Image (cartoon, rainbow, N blue to C red; front, side):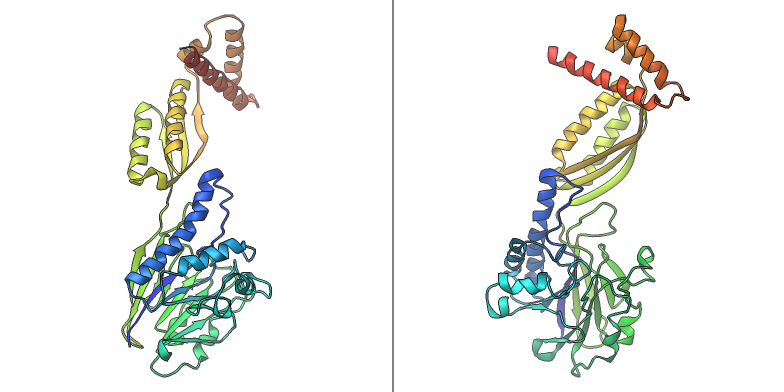
Length: 384
């Protein structure tokens, strides 16, 4: 009997996005629930037997009851089975988001009958009248030093069932940055346990370990620098032992991009704007971390500031990092502030300090000059 699964993970519902302030962070937080609805839509359209969620469903065990209620509502449009395991963000502690769920959810056992929270170690879940067996690796605390998937090798499963493992952790050989991290998972577990598919969570990008072992990644990108996030996986298994077919399906709404850009003249600003235009057809879906480098005069710095202010209003979020962008005044810049008198004397004194490589406060002097220039431009504009 064939099985179709949607594999997803790392929803981290309730994430606060402290580094994305204001309305932008709130929009990102709300979108995560909307993206769960999109996962349900994919499952419905693909006529999946089940959606398996490989941990970190919630950002913490302390998420609000409102988030729990919204989660249930987001699942409603797919009537097949939803299968969840806890992750390191929402481990199955005695007092956890999972133990609170019954007080929030209405219905049988405090939740709909098609929603399964796998919270007890070494207890498989049988679906499709025993034709599909889900083997969970259950995190009962944030970090484990032992491989919780080891029991898959000895699990007693009915003959003829498709065997699917569900785990949250690090396959060390494939995630070198997390090689010393807890919650280890053996790279060859699918083979030793005779699994038809091993659905993993924790890594936020889609990643193939082998033909039968995949990280789905988060369905909604949540940080700069993630590798291939924003997807779910449609997994088809024709029969026990057959190689699975795995299709990557994009579902994420927001596009996160980070890059460095050198500014030395006006054409570089024009090229930067063309690049921003190319990143996403809808700027309101785009978050950008922009590192600026180069050397500019004050007039060009003013032009760049104005252009980026316009982009800041268009984008969902713009993080501008300009510590490596040096603003050096030209003679025309300083003449624009004042050609003579007390102000010009002060400007020349600041300029001398800004150009002295031995002055410990040269950067402060340069910043003061730039501030004077911007203030001058602002006053000139106001008087027009």
